[in-house]
Amino acid sequence: MAVPKRKMSRSNTRHRRSAWKAEAPKLVKTVENGRTVYSLPHRARVVEDSQGNALFLEYKGRKVADV
Image (cartoon, rainbow, N blue to C red):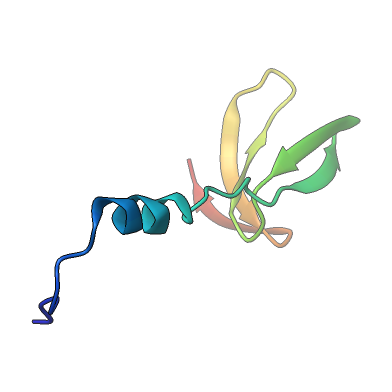
């Protein structure tokens, strides 16, 4: 296990931590039933009927699982 050779100052620690930034998720715009829907890419999506009940999961136009 790697162990630091010297103590890192509070200033340097905080500077290093501040460099990490959260990114907004990359969304893909699709049109479903006349509505514009934004979803995460490469994820199975839930196919719903007209009442909003979940029917099955779909990925790349194919049914992959039942809900």
